[in-house]
Image (cartoon, rainbow, N blue to C red; front, side):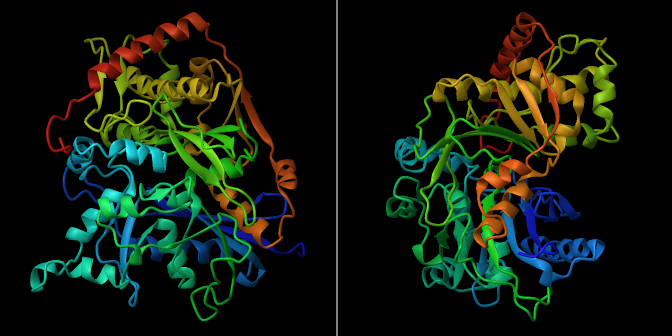
Length: 514
């Protein structure tokens, strides 16, 4: 590859879409971002407009290339990374969605999950998919869409219209990676990491599972082909007559957290990272072994390169971390997320205030769909600074919950944790995180590692980078944070956090939407 070629990465996240261009050194050449609307039709429901996401994707790709003066013919490949579990159904012929996408945070199928528990399918799901039965994953979202998706359903004489069409392959199912790749190339594919998040995929057989498809009434005909995350055969190329005006191979795809694992060069068993985004996701590479968790973690596919075995990971999924800071802004406790560090530093402690940001239930290691957000320990002396600090501390405490479970499952004591995502720009949070978990925190120079990971996957597939050793050489430390808090103090504050979580559990007692 010549020096003036690059690899692009579409990073389609929960709150917006980013396009980044990377050079051979893994450095950022171009970067554009655009938010999309968060749609809340009912309490506990969260949707996105797939067409808005696609329009934003085209916009950020065009804008980033223009700003950097990079022509589309200079892109050796494009990688895609995405908010996982978010589910779309679309018409195979027109390419139009039949309903808004149901977002991973959505809780409308909580009752359905509880029926699964009553039907004793939870063990089967965990055994085959490595996942906990939860409304978080795609299966019940797809089932709901098949039953409710057609926007003109009430005008039709046959109520099963969408399902009938799906059984003929006329309506397609996909997570957001599949949607973006379909719009880019016309191919209906997904990668192994995204397939592993649907609750329909056997991660040991590496295939869609007939028993699970039957349980959720999802027709096989609507499913995407499952391919390696870094695919030498590629998923297809962009249309030279399309918005890019060039045929660029789309050669890599990873769910956002697996992409961050790849971008942090966590290629070996025991390597771990935590990404702080809307939620936080702590992943540890377990190599070719799918380690079964006994402490509330998920067993998931990490990544796969063409011609190589699948690499698995243990994952702790925390639903709300960065979104807790957004909530502070929503309720006017802050005007800008950058304020949080200064406000938190302005007080010595939270004065006993604890925030449990269980706005959409609690994920690992608690897995309580009916937990809800809670503030405890308020007095007349409590000020917004205490609540802001307690919110930052809740991010660190939830990470410790997962870190302790990870160490127990993997049998490895963690001495260092690589971190990335928007929230790690906050030095106060990084130091607090180091104090609470008692481990070194390492922040890389390039912290948009989800985009970088998908770029690496695509670039490796087309030979832009020769091997993973070269990628390790690209990785650079921006700053390291060592524990400064006395371990006994950290343990004491964490113990009270556990008490606070107990009070948040099971709060929503009916319907999952309260």
